[in-house]
Image 1 (cartoon, rainbow, N blue to C red):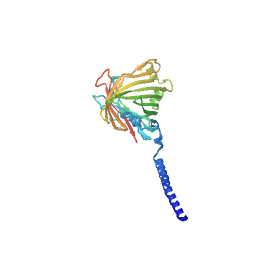
Image 2: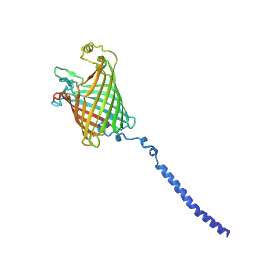
Image 3: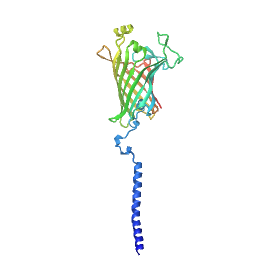
Image 4: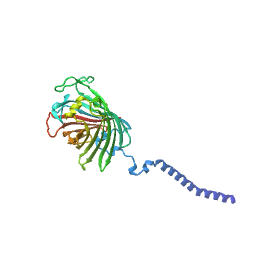
Amino acid sequence: MMNKNAYLVLAATGLLMAPVSGFAQTSTTSVNTNSSTVKMEDLKKADEKEKDIDSEITDARMRAQLGSKSKWSFKSSLAYSGGSVEEPLSGVRPNYRASATIEAMTTLSGDVGVNYRLGERDNISFGTGVTVVDPLHGDIVKPAEDTRKGRKGTLARYEVSTPYLSWSRGYRAFDTQMISSMQYSHATDSDSINLTKTFGAASFSQTVLANFGQSKWNGGTSFTLGKSFYTGDLDDPNMVAAAKAGKYKRSDMSFGLFPFLQYTFNDRYSFRTVFGYFQFARYEGYADNFQLEPYQSVGTGISITRDIYLYPNVQFTPKDIRADRTNVALSANLNLF
């Protein structure tokens, strides 16, 4: 009888313990499952989570200006200054901001270098300036023929000089897209070192872009401020004589405001115009600021990819719109890797 009662007690105890053990096992499994799916990122506040810069900067040109989203990448900003609309492929172009009779050689120039991405918004770039004279004519590996009126001889086809270091930051503020940037460029070419005694130049720029409601139109402005540095006074006799005669002025500071307007046709193409009406320079020995000849560019923005943006355009002076006083141009932002 005692044995039977013992068996009954053991059976009852087993029935009571079974649910408890099951609950404990289920709870343990649940806790482990939850622990494996909860991430530290999910515990952060919304404003603490790192954002993709493309969610803040949606403009194709500004994205390309910032550079690739890779940690390390190749970054370049190039501009081709061609002939007039009458002779767009000419090796000579009019100086449309001075006079149609003052000519210059066509050039491909800009900066090429390496971009290091510090974070979602910040970039550090370093590289050098490059210039190619008359890249569309003659033997590209030989000096360029100087075909300007009254000139003869050849010009150096290539120049690699003026290394630079720059910082840029893209962000959104006050419901506008913005890019802030600073750059220092160091003079290394012989004319800058020996003739103008240039040491280098520092600059700051700020770009602001706002959307006009639900319209495909948007616009904004770019502000630039630059400062030149020199190693000493002019000592070349020709440069000194030109400065005394007022034919040469050595730049001290420059600043400008460049409003622009855009219309977006689709993700790839847009209409763009830039108003270079408010550009000023201050020269050494002068207390006043000088306004540079106003200009305007009109062209098409082409977003080849997120990292490649082209802007073929025509530049002209609004005060004197003439076919022979224009400049056919192409600017490009090219980022690789």
